[in-house]
Image (cartoon, rainbow, N blue to C red):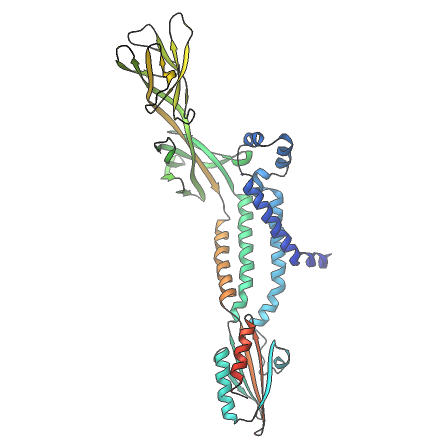
Amino acid sequence: MIKKLNKLFSSVRLTIFLFFSLAVTSILGTIIQQGLPIERYKALYSPGVFSVLKFFNIFDMYHSWWFTTLLVLLSINIIICTSRQIPRITKLIFPAKKEIDDTVFGSSQIRKTFQSQKKLSDLEQQSEILVKALVGNPVKVKTTGTCYYFFAEKGKYSRLGMIFVHISILLILAGGLIGNILGFNGQMNIVEGNRSGTVILFGGEGTEKLGFDVRCDDFSVEFYETGMPKEYKTDLTIIDGEKKAASATIRVNHPFFYKGLKFCQATYGIAGVSDFRVIAKDNRTGDETVLKLNMMKKVPLPGSNSSFAIARFVTDHGGNGPAVLGVLIEPGKAHDIFWILKNDRTVSQQQKGGFTFMLKDLSRLYYTGIQVSKDPGVPLVWAGFSLIMIGFMLSLFFAHKRIWLRISGSQDKYEISIAASFSKNRETFEEKLEELTGNLQ
């Protein structure tokens, strides 16, 4: 059973299958937005589809048991594949020391043998030039008799590139697993002036206590002329142990970090409105009066027996910006209800009971939506990213070159044997070798 499991987890087919599965599921996780409120998913999908997606935890798939299982299987696969390659690479980098090894001239990838009648001194000199031109400065060894050996090696540590890449993938996977198991991702909505120490986790996974409070000191938002938000930011303070521990201003794409937690500006909203100021213009006299109102509190209209009140407020009415639902109360008549827009925009419904109404201003009480995330696996991911860059550089830009050259024979005729090993671009190496050996023949 152990042999079968070892064969299974060292299979390249399993690696391809796991990579393909992770790619497909990642595409699925991109198409289906993660971490939305569960009610949103119920509105988007039919009951049958919703049940299937919820069963497989697709709404938070990167924290699901099956996605974690895929990462664990891929980690085991890489560990076993790498462990089987380490002995071979170790032998290549740190071979057993031998004074002379003639077997390389019969077993190397690149072999060449020819005869020469040149003087031994010339052959030695030209052999040294050849080895140096192909690989580097050679080591020269003379044995008993007339046998001379030249050996040179370069770039042996480039063999570690594959090991580094595999280890880096393991570090990245380990960081992802640690983040999935020990980390969390959620949001906290805090009204200006209030504080909270509880994060509502995405995907309906409950809540997380921070162990300290986050206070929203101030929230501000700037708008374009179209009414769309231009920039919004939050001034927050960390209250840890009932003491001010830190303070910061966060904007979109400008997070704040505290105790391994990341605080990002995610959203905002209006928690309450008050102090409405509505201009009531008497169409007969042209006089304008600023009415100061609060929700569901009526005020009398000047020069009239009628009263006016505000029943509702919306942040955007039909793409025209903020608006209030006004109520005109006239004696003996049914209440006249109509929308009043802000930003000096007028519509026919604003002219009621001899008055033209326009929303001038109001006081908003905002809440800030802060996304809070904890990912203790990030250092491992960064370490893996750094190591994978080193591994790719070793693999792509360096090559392991080795060359052996032997001169044997007598004064009448010498035999030159060449053996070489080259980890990549072998054809180019052989062409250069063929060109340089012409001087020796």
